[in-house]
Length: 287
Image (cartoon, rainbow, N blue to C red; front, side, top):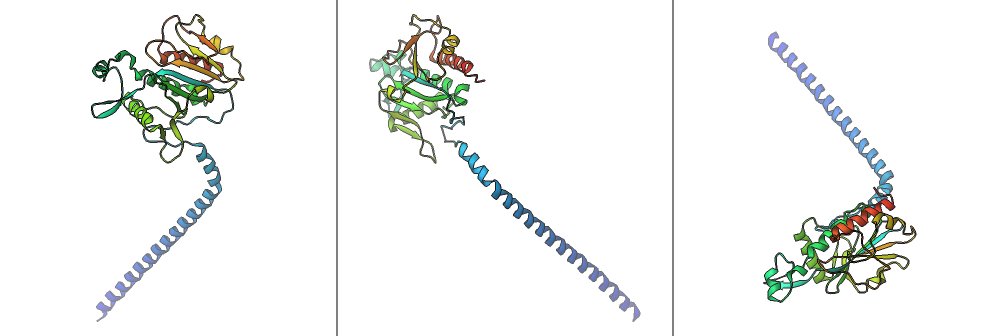
């Protein structure tokens, strides 16, 4: 009779010990939950204190649009800037087969010949390379580019905002230009800002009054070194550079103040713009 009683007493002790352990674990869990709640409250208080600062920072940030991202830059600068006008850009829309396309000499040579047009005149890749040179330049990223205006060979004028990032491939660029010429504008997703828009002629109504307007052509008799020429321009005025975006010929604009050549050899529009941006960056100490 004593043996069973001894066994039962041992079992009770083990159960009591197990219950004590469970109670300790519950208390530990409750304490950890309380610590987590306190940490969450502290984090919320810190977030409330810094929310104002974060909102100010977010207002300065730019948003991205599918297809045409926006590049952040110092757009609030009040220093003198530069403006580019690309004249005689080859951007013509035509219905080829069952779809509308931007005509180019590579893909539509037969179509152009059938319509008695010279394929060599249809070079939309020139304005594409020119826009890449302008928008990818350090001068633009420093916020010193005011605007870019493109006038097509057919007389259509449109504006390209400086903080737009042009697609890296020509195929996507052609699709955007087709959409722009058909719908007259391209608006960023989630915002009302028009990144590209067709505007009324003439371009002179959009240029600053006190700006210096400079045209470029290999045929000009005034051959200059770009660095010295830009250095001599006053620091109080905006500079407007007018560059031809066509394969052959020269620009003919009556609003240009000076007409210069920056090389003894014919240069592409992209290479001419590259020299311009380098000279302006040296003048304004943009690295």
